[in-house]
Length: 612
Image: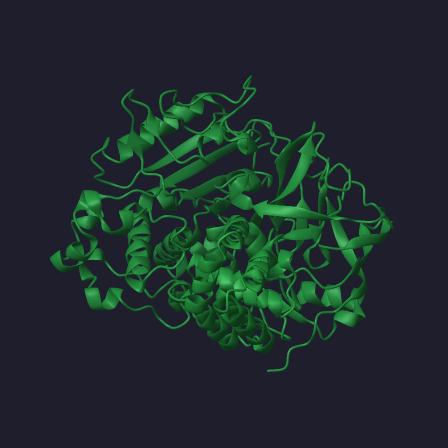
């Protein structure tokens, strides 16, 4: 199918100021649908583990009915995703009609006792899990990135392109227009918002646009982060990408970007992000920008999971000092990378012409070409032209700012969604690799993303949890601005999660519905005094599920305390999983919801006026 190329030029876009806005930011100002309980779902980061767990969580929410033919998932108001959670969440929100929701999440929910080794070994056509079962290892993606670079993809777009070819292209959400796999589309909410964009920008009439699925979908907040400077210190500011706008909706105090400008204040229509403003009309909130191409879904999914870009750059750098190892890896993995790109419609002729001579020269004792190839991936970190809505720098040079994984700042997705004042209830799926445990001092150990939400540093053996306040050299310094809940509520959470799990016996899933009052957080634009309930759903094994499995499936997993691949806490670096591993984890996380239905349905009550 012919695909329109990316469009460059001058464009008109709406800006959405949020600093001091009255009324404050809400989901309802973008999506008018009534959703009982005003529930947001947060899918945490965690690579392919988070993707697989998220499949089951979406499946479980779709399987529970609030009323006849009304599922919980259809009533979710907002979906906040981070990194691996974005891998499953973003394609789901934009899923085309050609793929069913049921296939996407791995098939209909099956009771654990009905699972069989044969059934666990397959995934349905269109499942997001099927995209990570081959060619998705860390080094596989490294060589895919290298070959893409030789076709002309800039280094700061390599990771986004790789992840887009794997997770978006199979659903038509990353159409490849040319040999260099240049992003050539933009995204918006629906036909109405698309028409507004095209009326203001006739040059985009033929441009490819991705629209949110016509099936019930929540308001999407895809979380990434941008490097900023505060008082000479490098920190991260929260960037959220939605179907309507992209930007930093808060005003992080005294945080400046690479151009020396105070960041934040709102967002610009998402298609116009990564641009340079040339005119701004504050009375109409319309900006004119110069842009080489439109901001695309591939950008948000890649930027949200940018920690893997940093990892690929690190591996590439190590190969530069070990040309023999690099040559051996190229011979072993290069052909598979070429074949993968070819299957995705990327021309690889240029890659082949560079690969063969370098390997031949190395075989003759000349390692210089191989070493040079390894250095080609320097600068792999995603970078974009950011400018603050707070004070658009019209007709000023805009340097690119480096972006980081959303989880490098706040891996739960909770802080970002609290910027929306009509969110009253949150289902927080913590799809962590950290088992819930108790240390020798009796302190409950949880994932690093949770303590900072209450003002505490991540757990350190021997010292436990220490407040950020007053700490000059804190553990996890990038999390120091994440507090959104009172410190004293943290201990209540630990106690109840531990009790829910069976106090170390891991009998049932650790789930706890916690009423909370927000504390002020200018870094994320969270106001104090808002009443919210967070249903914490912590990823941890449970005898109640394991005991329902057939002996054959239990044998596949191994003994409960020593299950396959540390189930369910697969390593974040294990990006390529088998269908069996994916299906087991997805079934488990769906079962967690099915086994505790009242805890979930209780959140979906008729909406009342939001406080705060």
